[in-house]
Image (cartoon, rainbow, N blue to C red; front, side):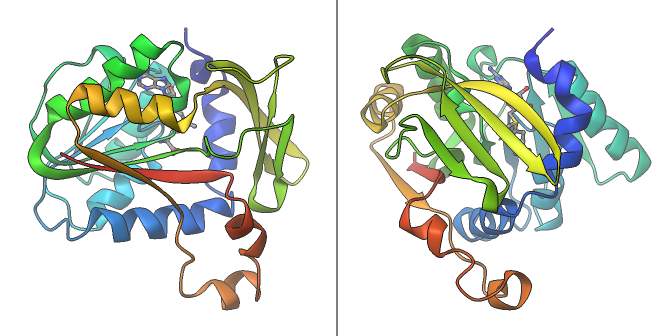
Length: 245
Ligand SMILES: C[S@@+](CC[C@H](N)C(=O)[O-])C[C@H]1O[C@@H](n2cnc3c(N)ncnc32)[C@H](O)[C@@H]1O
């Protein structure tokens, strides 16, 4: 039983409504580039919200992988009800091996679940082994450049996270909270420095990775109000890691 098996339904309901998603999905689409008929692996796909968007953006063969059987059950339910041709699998991204190669790999909030440097390296190897040379990996993560000391409070954007240990260190325990009005869902993950992420991806064979804030969607003034993203842009709570193989 993984932690997401117990929170799957709450996570699905709340995470779909989190304002941060506006910028995250908009940025993901920009950063993945033209997906027409491209094959795509979505690691830690959860209930398939992002996976279905990727399919809608034109991708061809799409595979979603998650360690939580409950999250995959939700994704599969949706696929069964409204089929778009996504293949889902229950698997640990750190132990997946090569099931591709794919033209793109995405991973929205996978890497900070690594419990050790070794596991992080295994995740980076999975990405490398499943990505065609010259192609791109895009991952969302809690911003390693802005560690919680002890809290990062972005409730305005739908989430916050706090340090559960006395001091910040590599692999420190964090607890995240997603908010939908008075309803919340909590989950535990880890803090790794940007140096540690970079080292894992370099060791796995990537020559260059960058870390970038989410892009502000063009319709955000109308949708959320002028200046809505200013606080996020001043100190982003979540970022994209982009690696080219
Ligand atoms: C915050 S959720 C993100 C789900 C989805 N990507 C999204 O953005 O809504 C994190 C997901 O990572 C999955 N996960 C955590 N560790 C994993 C691992 N080692 N391999 C595969 N999935 C993992 C969890 O089961 C959960 O579904």
